[in-house]
Image 1 (cartoon, one colour):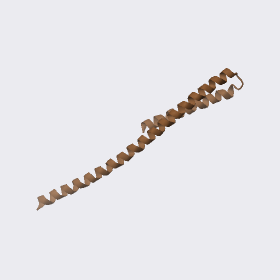
Image 2 (tube, one colour):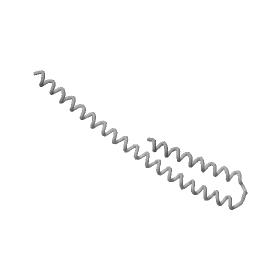
Image 3 (cartoon, helix red, strand yellow):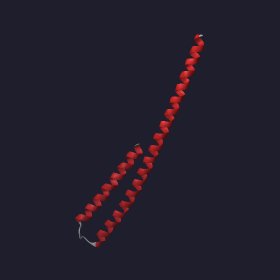
Image 4 (cartoon, rainbow, N blue to C red):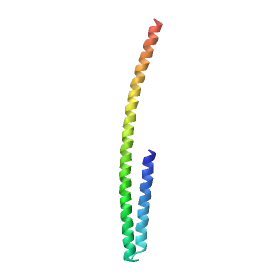
Length: 98
């Protein structure tokens, strides 16, 4: 869960940087083709970073779902073992009382 939160934070930071870069483009409207080219490169890098963070988020989400399913399965097994142990203890008590 902490990894998922970290991925979300990194994704939000990447979006923030992307929005900042777009804001600079709007402020420097007509500032020159070199600046525009540099900003386009930065935007491409941010898009790539955003795609990577989304992929990481999806992978972490799947890992979390798998872990939750495994925990539910283990809980079921633990409940079954607990029930069997209770029955065995009750049987021993019944034998001792005879």
